[in-house]
Structure formats: C-alpha cells, structure tokens
Length: 345
Ligand code: NAP
Ligand code: F7E
Image (cartoon, rainbow, N blue to C red; front, side, top):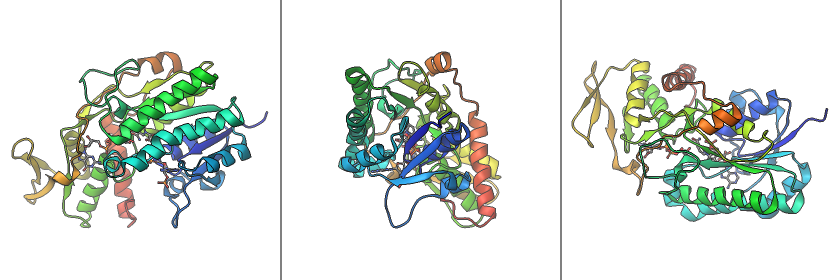
C-alpha cells in the first residue's frame, strides 16, 4: 500500500517533533518545514532520534508563493499546521508579525489547498488561549471566546477561517483547541520549562534565582506526547470536526514551581503575602523564587481548564500522563542534561 504523505509545518517546535515521531511510527512519509535562518533549530528532532527520517523544506508562513510551491511539490494527503509565533508574551511586542503568521498564515495555507487540491486534509493548531478570561468552569467546544492577547486573537481568526473553508468549500479542515501541553522539549520561554531548567541550573550552581511573573495563574497542563495522538485521531475521522484536548485538571504556576523544586531536592518555604510572595530555600535561607514585574503581561488569562469529553467519546482519546508525572518527567530530563554539561535550551 502507498505510504501516506504528511506535511508538518513547525516540525522544529515541540509538537512538530512529537507528531513527526508518531507519524513515522505509523508508517507515514514525513515532510517537515523549517524557517531559513543562520542556525537551524533541530535539537528536538535530534533528541527524538528522527532527524534523518524527515525530508525538510523551507517554508515561511508570511510567503504565499512559498507555501504554494511546497504543497504543489509534495502533494500531501494531510497537512498539520503547527507553525506559529506561539509565545503569548511576545505577541504583545510583535502584534503585527504575530497576526501575519498566526492568522493570515493559516489563510495562506487554506487558499493554497483550495487552489491546488481540495482533497488534502488540513489540521489547524487552535488554542485554549482563544477562550481567554471568563470562567473557572471547564470549557468545552461551545464555550465563548474572549481572547486577551494578539496571539489569541490571531488564533481566533485561524480557527474560524478553518471552519469557513470546511463549510464553504467542503475541505476536510479541522481545529484542535488544545490546552497547555508541556514536555522536556518545551521551549524555555514557557513557564513550565523555565521553572524546571532554571531550578536545575540553580542546583548545579549556574544560576542563583528564578524570577517569575504572575504565579497565581492556573493552567490545565498535559503532556505533549499524549496530545499529538489526539491531533492525529482528529484527522482520521470520517467527518471533520473541532475538538478540545485537555486534562480537566488545573494547577497554579506556584504549585508547579513548588513541586519541581521539591523533586530537585530544595526544601522551599513561601514567605510574604500575595502578590509579593517569595520562596526561600530552607537549608540556605536564600531566596530561590521571586516576582519580577517584567514577566507580567499587559492582559493575562488567570484560569484555563478544559473539558475533553467530546474527544474522549468520538476519538477515544484521553491523556495518560498526570500533572505530578509531567513535572517529574521534565525535571528528570533537565537534571540529566545538566549532569552531561549540556546547555538547557
Ligand atoms: P513551538 O515549539 O513554539 O513551535 C512553533 C513552530 O513554528 C517552530 O517550528 C517555529 O520555527 C515555527 N514558526 C514560527 N514562526 C514561523 C513562521 N513565520 N513561518 C514558519 N514557521 C514558523 O510551538 P508548539 O508548542 O510546538 O505549538 C505548536 C502549535 O500549537 C503552535 O501553532 C501553537 O500556537 C499551538 N498551540 C500550542 C499549545 C501548547 O501548549 N504547546 C497549545 C495550544 C496551541 P522555529 O523553530 O524556526 O522557531
Ligand atoms: O504562561 C504565567 C503567564 O507562557 C502560562 C503557549 O503554548 O499555552 C502557551 O501559552 C502562565 C501565564 O503559556 C511567567 O502569565 C508567570 O499566565 O507558559 P506560558 P501560555 O501563555 O499559557 C497556550 C495554550 C498556547 O496556545 C501558547 O502557544 O504562566 N507566568 N510567570 C509566566 N509565563 C512565562 N512564560 N514566564 C514567566 O516567567
């Protein structure tokens, strides 16, 4: 039987690496796209040991002709659009670039599919950030969007243009509304990996302190390896539909940091009062974690928790890794890297 061909945009990112690994195990031929730059970001694919199994093509979300050329050339069965400016904080500094990549970038791909071959299946990486501020209840596919950043607003456009191309042109186009998912391959700019990598570096004497922004924010954190399975399952159904992927549990940044510190071997005591609490290492009495206003966002999302019942029912998907195990996996990986003297990228 002919191998299925998948195009993964953003293969050099966290989800791209895990999804490529999954699809290779399922026998796909994988084309992955990277941005042309002076230094390629291939460490995740190297860590998973799959670098040599992927055909690379350069693709920039801002260039329509570039996208069209790639799709014409490889004629994929499935396109997974994971590429995006995905850091919410940066979207406040670069809002126009973020909208170009995360909103119009999606449209450029969909337009190319419409022109080249409407039979190509399309997955869009939508985000729980689209729900923004609102409720402490579990959010589902029918919950209202109230995006709170240029990133989230761009993702809302990407989401609805995907729905529109499905409804208007009959393209198999679906969105996964994914809640935060983390792993040892997470970028160190995101709070979970910032916490595990910095605390490990403090323990090995390379850093002195961990400075964070709003550590009362609560998120529904899952494991990226589980979530890419759900992404693939969405693309294998008979009828395209949008699904939430989430664990249904919420924890604060403070809880994440406290557990990570404990697993690394620090005995933390939190002192002071909200919002100026700080954490001291009991054995040395030195401040280990403190607030830095620089990491606050002009508008943040204080609480996000998802209800993935629809994915469970229709896709038979459920996350396997629990919060405590996720923190442990990330801490262990960073400890191992530090022991080998590696840079915690
Ligand atoms: P990530 O690690 O930041 O990876 C993003 C990828 O997009 C990288 O490969 C990056 O390339 C590429 N990229 C960025 N700008 C681009 C551009 N202008 N043209 C072409 N490629 C570009 O993100 P992730 O965590 O894997 O997330 C994957 C997708 O899911 C993103 O769309 C994100 O917004 C969305 N999402 C993520 C989460 C989550 O919790 N992880 C939750 C919901 C939705 P470089 O390597 O060159 O930077
Ligand atoms: O922040 C707070 C911060 O940057 C989580 C992306 O994958 O998930 C991710 O977006 C929370 C926020 O992730 C620091 O204010 C406190 O409330 O790890 P984050 P995010 O913004 O939730 C969604 C679903 C996506 O779609 C995105 O692409 O933690 N926080 N102190 C901090 N955050 C960071 N980064 N750094 C801090 O020092």
